Length: 262
Image 1 (cartoon, rainbow, N blue to C red):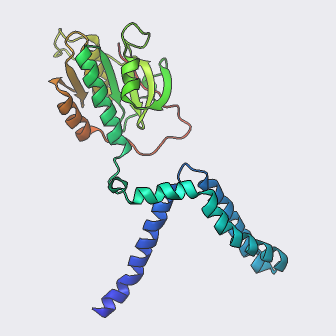
Image 2: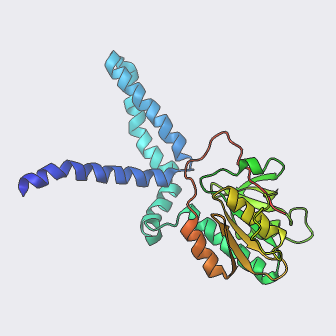
Image 3: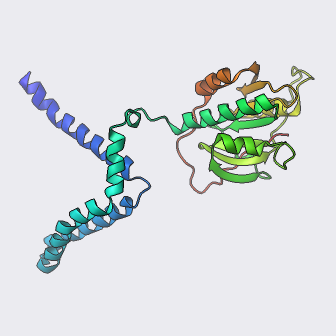
C-alpha cells in the first residue's frame, strides 16, 4: 500500500500543479497580466543565460528586478487578483456554461420572442461542414450571438429582414444570406421560402436551421435533411442541445461568412 502511494504521489502532484496553472491562465486571459508574464519569461531566460555565461553584473541586476517585481506585480494587478479569488468562491467557476450553450440560449430566446410577435426569421448554425461558400454576397458581421442582435436583424421593414443569419464558431458571421432552396418533391406546397431554404441547406450541409414562420409564428428546425415543424421553444432548445456540436478550432485567416435564405 505504501509503495502504491509512493508511486502515485508524483502523478497527483503534477495534476495539482497543472490544475493550478490552468486556473491562473483562466484568471489572466484577456488581461494586461498576459503581457507582463511574457515579459517576465524573457527576463527569466535572460537571467538563465547570464548565469550560464558568467555575466555577474547582469545577473545581479536581474536578481534585484525579480525581488521588486513580485511586489510590483501584486500591487499593479490587485483588481485582477481580487476578481480571481472571488471567482474561486463562486460555484459557477467550476460549472461555467460553455459558449455553445450560451449561443443556444440566445437563439432560443430570440426565436421565442420573434415567434410571439410573428416576425419571420431564419438562423443557420454551422457544424462541421463550412457555410462560407454560401455567403459570398452576404453582409459580414463577426459579432457576439445575443438575443437582442438576432431580434434586431429580423426586424420588419429592414434590408436584412428577408435574409438568413449564419452562426459560425459561436459568432454571428453573416446576415442577409441566401440559402439554396430544397428540390425535394415531397415538400408541402404550403411551405414558404424560409422553410424551403432551411431544408435545402440542411440537405446540402450538416447545419442546423431554425425557422420562424411569418404567417403563423410557429417554429421549425431543419437538420440532416429533415424538417421538424410546429415546435415550441423548449423543443427547439432540446434539438439544438442534441445536434449542435460546433467545431472548436478557430480557422485563422478565413473570413467567417455564411449562407442565406429568402
